[in-house]
Amino acid sequence: MPRQPDVSILKLGAQIGVSSALGDSLICERCSNQVHYIENCEYCKKSVCLLCVKSAKRVQKTRRLSICKGCWGNLKARKQFKAVN
Ligand SMILES: [Zn+2]
Ligand SMILES: [Zn+2]
Image (cartoon, rainbow, N blue to C red; front, top):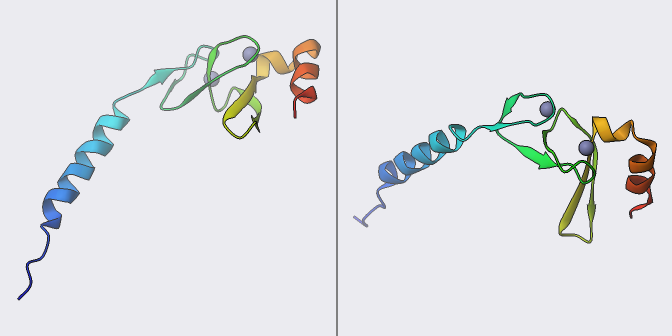
C-alpha cells in the first residue's frame, strides 16, 4: 500500500493559523469599532473599517484608493477622488 501523507498534522496547523489571525484585531480610527480589516483613507490618512469606507477603487493595478464617509462629505476630497482613474 502506498504511504499516505499525514493530513491530520496539516489540518491542525491550519486551525492554529486561523485562530491566531482572528486574535489580531484592529481599531477603526473613525468609529472606534474593533475590526479585523482596516483601510487607509487617502484624504484624512485615518485607518478606517469597511463600514466607514464610502468608496474605493483600484488605481494602477497595485494601489487601492479609499475615501472614508467623513471625507466624502468634503467636496474638495470627493472631487479629487472622482478625478482619479
Ligand atoms: Zn477620510
Ligand atoms: Zn469604522
